Amino acid sequence: MRRFTDGFYGYAVALFVCLAGAGLFLLVTPQSREEHIPRLDYSITVANFGHEVPYGVWAPRQDPPGWVPNSNRIAKGENGAQVLHLGYATAKREHAMFAQSDEQPAAGFASRMANTDKAMGTQQVGGVTWEKRFREDKDQRTLVRFLPEVTLVITGTADWDELAQFAAQLHQRPQG
Image (cartoon, rainbow, N blue to C red; front, side, top):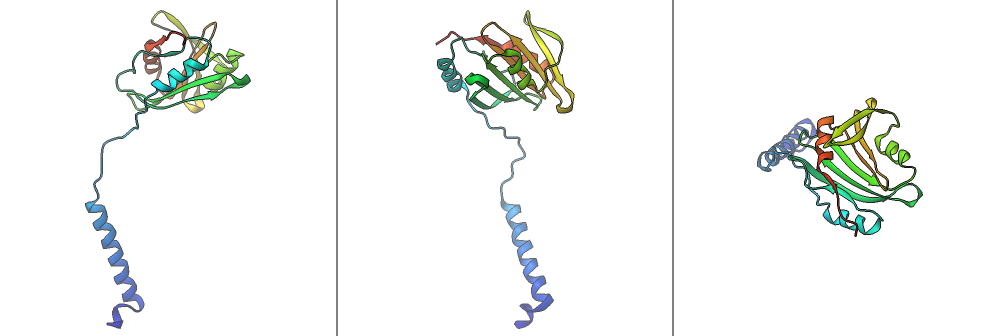
């Protein structure tokens, strides 16, 4: 019996037993082939943000088809301004983020969210003009809308059509 626990044969048997156990474990463990992106409800975050800012909050009427909201938070921006962030996995499984703030200067907020200060034209979405920005090294596209009391930014690796699809869903909720 000592022959199976000493030397090379003992090592080989122990290795075989470990590999067989791991293989059996992998064989009987359920494996999902479906993608799972966690869905996070942002309605309470948006409501809380609305109580903290002196303007009507912008939010989507509904999420675009196939988009999954997967993050949300309220952060402090420059000069103590509040910033609302809503993160998404788009229908094409790219990343998109919506941010809004009354941070001043507004151009500084937009540049920080877009990772660039260079505009490359405009895009019309539902009769509203959005400024377009693109940062090539990050493959980051951004739509920016400057309003008198708030700046809206939609940014991410999503294509222009997806960003515009989200912009079309935005509406301002009553202040409160």
